[in-house]
Length: 119
Image (cartoon, rainbow, N blue to C red; front, side, top):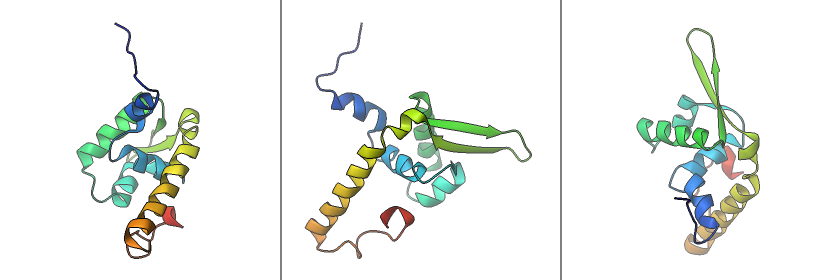
């Protein structure tokens, strides 16, 4: 039977929903990353969850997995052309989140990590 969505945002959330996928995608908007780099940038994600999320994003065509044939083996992830089509959505989510932090807590400096993503 053919799948039907009640509203189109369901299709979006099916691909990028959940706690970690959008965070992974935001990091990848700043260039290719190895699994170990992503893990370091997202210390609260388990290795198992990171691997699962990367596989799902790859299966949906949102990211590319690049395997280099060298010793030791090296794998990097990058946004696919299709994944780059999410740039505007990701930027909007970050902007809204920053506004939310300011509204709820009064200032972002005490509640938002100082990383390259928050400049």
